[in-house]
Image 1 (spheres, rainbow, N blue to C red):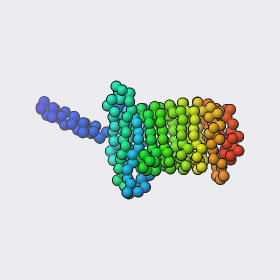
Image 2 (image 1 turned 180 degrees about the vertical axis):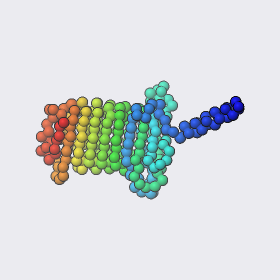
Image 3 (image 1 turned 180 degrees about the horizontal axis):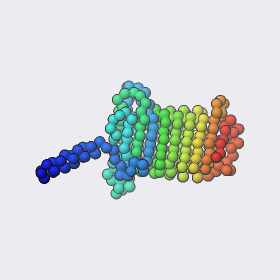
Image 4 (image 1 turned 30 degrees about the vertical axis):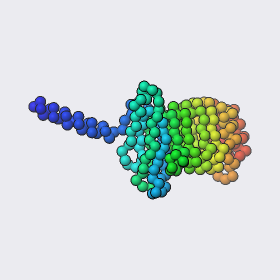
Length: 244
């Protein structure tokens, strides 16, 4: 009888271990992870490689093609505090659009520049990436950027010539947004950014492209300078400014 019980326990243990090998993990609950979400367009069957540069202490990458997520753990991060993981290369099975999801701990750097990743990125959303110190998306064809994270002091988005919509919320350290070469920009949503002062918002208005056609809108809510910013800078360019 005991032999049968031991055998059943051994089978259960082996099955559990085998299953766990295929289950993504972090040392924190998933709902506490820092999130990067992006839509990647792999446009050519002769160039299927995607190579983002991501510095973090732990991460799970779902490449969006049905394959198993990749898991990365910096074994020294607990002792040294470093964040050096870099999943630099993934080869897709075919050309197409893929929704990539990264769940991570302590993301400090993200480089999605065209010369790095070698593929177009259409949308980018960052959620609670509170340790992020450096973000680069140079020469990407991003149409939508959504950033909800603390810690970042400046967003340099001026090289995103295809950018149409920008949403920035709950960035408690943000002081500056650089937007002076975004001719397609149509909508800006700024919410709960306490250090975006009147001067910071006026600087955004100064950089806005002229609204030669269509509706161009800036939506402001609960930013530091909402009450005293000079909205006339934007309206004189044909933009509508809504303050809630």
